Amino acid sequence: MLVAFSVMVVSFSVLRLTPGDPALAILGDSATLADIEALREKLGLNGSAFTQFIDYAMPLFRGDFGSSIVTDQPVLDLVGASLPVTLQLITLTMVMALTIAVLLAVPAAKYRFGVFGLFFRIGTSMSLSVPVFFSGQLLILLAAIRWDLLPAGGYQAGFPGNIQYLLLPALTACGPLVPILVRVLQSSVIDTMGQAFVETAQVRGLAGPRLVWRYLLRPSLAPTIALSSYIVGSLFGTAVVLELVYNLPGIGTRLLAAVFSRDYPVVQGIVLVMGILVVLVNLVADLLSGWLDPRARAVS
Image (cartoon, rainbow, N blue to C red):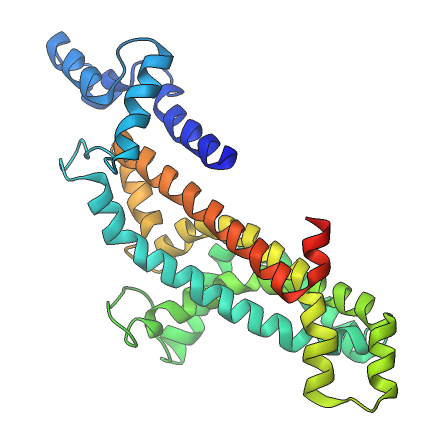
């Protein structure tokens, strides 16, 4: 609740921390005093800071996020039209990143001192150093233009047609994420390999997928799942760049358009919705970590 309240305060402060008079900034120098006062009233900028916060917070509990200054559409309608694209992109990115991390973590832990470990360290370092706006352009050049495997941009609603438009952006986002997830999971697997219950399982003859999943991966996944919840929050920021590069009609594109048009109610609404989603993702990650590894429940 405290985190959710903090998100509400941050979204409330977006408009109030704007230098100068937001109403004058929106309307321009040619606006009349009456127009400025009317817009200030609509934005809730009259009265004390406490009164403004109460006037801002009370409609939120009724599900009223206000209306856009530019289009006069309800903010929730605008967010609802754009948010699914971003959520699909983030979901696909995390599924791909976690799948690759799980496949690489155990070999990276077992053969960390061999040739595989050397190439793994070099590859992860290189992947971490490449910014997503550069790798995105490179993937468009190779996979879309030169090899004609996937669309270079745009979006088509509906499953499974939307997947082909999301694969390149998701792969681009995986570039810096996979090395982080693999290294964290690799470290956890190395620690788990030294536990007595793993040695006991090996003495009893357990091997193959059952040993890897039940005794190595499952107890090691809790830190990676916890880290993934923070990564999801950062992906909302990454989505702004990716949606520009790949021309996706997501929440990042909507946020930039609202910033450029100084549509502050939409900016406030998007910031608040993103914050609430990040809080929910962290809650789910904590519950999942406790299910995967009971030791995580004891720590939390």
